[in-house]
Image (cartoon, rainbow, N blue to C red; front, side):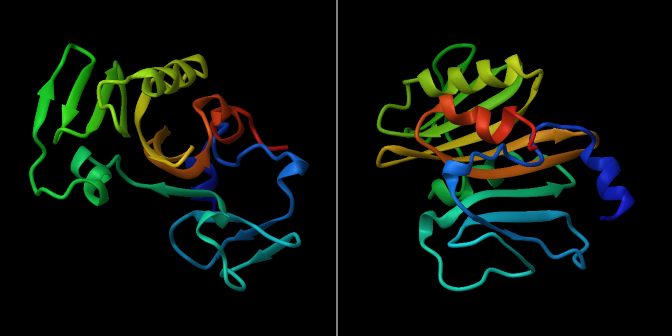
Amino acid sequence: MDKEVISNLGNQDYVFPAYDKKTGPLELIYDPSTSDFEFELYRSNEYLFSKELSGVRAVHGRYYYYALIEELPDTSEILFPYISDTEIERVRVNDELAILNENITEYQSGKIIVYETGEDPEDIINPQKVVDFLEKHSINSGRVLLINMEGRINVEAYLPINDHTARLLFTIESPDELETFIGTPAI
């Protein structure tokens, strides 16, 4: 692995997710010849390591995605796939909560912003749990997007690593499962 990548990763817990053997085999997709550091873990029939995904995979087959990017994306870049308008209309509810384009929660606590798509944009239970979790793990800045989908939550997190940003993608059933993907270092 490149020395610059290693120095940029530091010792952050959220580079690799924790692993529980109940998860089953995973295929690690990583190409060391690319200039960007990124990898994906997919559920698999056997443990594999490859430069590209082998075989056909289901939509929910991805277990985890990690990329080290230069800068923290802004709100419009993060929400681009979920906002049909070119402009974001922000209606402030209070100091912590704003509703974006009538259907997306924007919950802010300090330098942490959590966006959530859902049926009730004023429901801040999940965003509060995410903020509490991050602060408990001494992560005091970042942006997290929660996409609610039929009992599951797709998470897209942008968290600081030295002078860069880690982009994480994974799926959970509740914010109580964040520990697996963000809070516990891999063994």
